Length: 315
Image (cartoon, rainbow, N blue to C red; front, side, top):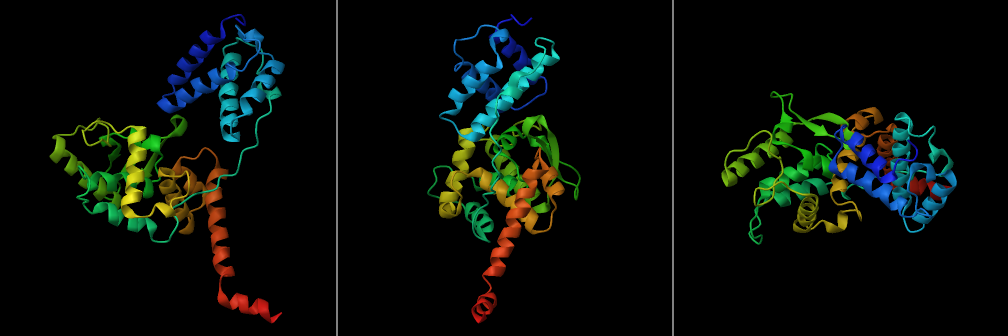
């Protein structure tokens, strides 16, 4: 079995992963990481028996030369999952990735929107019809922002939503999310978000007619499912219209809204376990980072107290 072609084994691995119903982006990441590192292998291997620890270390060294620690870590995890699959299938006796160094994980630094009232300013500004737009749709834009600000959804999770994903009786409304890594979760939603989604769906029916429960929840101005680039552009344009571009952390965009949701949970007393469940984190440490940042902000506020400054001068 060790002499089976690597490309064939990668296809088998991806097919096995697909049965877990991960997002399309997750499967694409596996495929990309496996093939990019494979391209660094010298001499070019043909079968899995050619993948010795020494060969893999050299390949990862070349791969890492021009990439960030996060990209290297993700590629390492993809190859580790691939070899774990091969061990389980009894193709190889052991996983050689233990001999390949993995970058230390970098600490998550939350990047919420800056400014105490910025989320509210954003929603108010976007809810107003902008006649300078070719085809304004404020109800849809508010619903998109609210799903990130009030439910903490990731970009990929929002794209995967169906109309029927928002359900439940009055007082028990919720959104069912297909989370990262195929982990489903349920996020309770309050009246404000529920009403925003309801206004959006009503405006959508007025534009395109009846909407079925299995239809994509978020659509573009042609009534077609929003795609990744379209959703990113929508959020960026909302920031511009609200005039808050300078309050969005660099590189955050839609993720700044999710970070704002998590940071406010921490500020309002939620513990790391609650944040973990609501945001679908795989690690409690990731959720804990929001609480630690909030504690730092509280300390900074105390340090800014003018009375404290006077006391320091009295010494």
